[in-house]
Length: 346
Image (tube, rainbow, N blue to C red; front, side):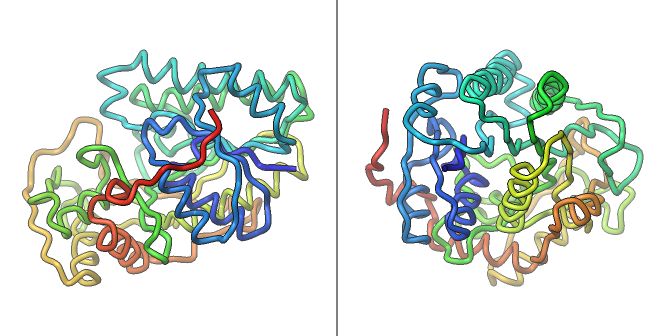
């Protein structure tokens, strides 16, 4: 039996595929490659020495999803597929609602048709919205402040309703904080389209000379150095959290939300300093005004995942920055320079 990984060619998806294969799971990947590259899956094969089927398909295409389930004995789903840029979601909310919500409804409908009722869902700490203080725990009131976050929150509610109607389902809702880093091999990592939206890929592209300088939004927050503090988690730790969540849903029924974070916060300036130390590159930056909606401090209370999943993050800020630099240094243009034809079933 196989684990279906939607969005498996993406940043977190590809790292999770590596961890699944290393633990001898059989996998099937579905991805439309709108925000990912087939080359990432070639690299997954290179790292693991294992092959797996890949379908170029969109979760909005119910017929294509049905074909995947017909051709494979799917036991559970790890659901990454979805649009994920906060700013883009504000400017184009209809696209986000249609893709993320309708796509998930399609997927769940096909799952029901084939009596597959185990899912690990890629949610987000954005479901917490603007909170008064950190750390954030799973029982806080949820209040997403942008269309992207609201799609995650709505999908969480949909999945709870599905379980209420059919209590054979087992569902884990994983609320990520700030994934960074890359596989230690330097073969797979974060390769955003265009100018990065997130801090670490932006820093690493400045370090490699692809971008001129970093913009730091706000140095007047009530923090020790005035810059915002976030909970950065190594993508490999995050991927391993998905395997722990998968074990949980395969053996249990119900719906549970879990924070995946380190429980520690690092400021923007601390991240810049650490990256400079590991890369031996100077990171020039400009200070600009705060962005609307940004909060001073955000970090996780990961204790529920420690108790319920027997999982905790192991890698520190130094590891995260070092592995990010290794990936970027080895792949200054991401996957584009070495993109090869991947065997894809259409």
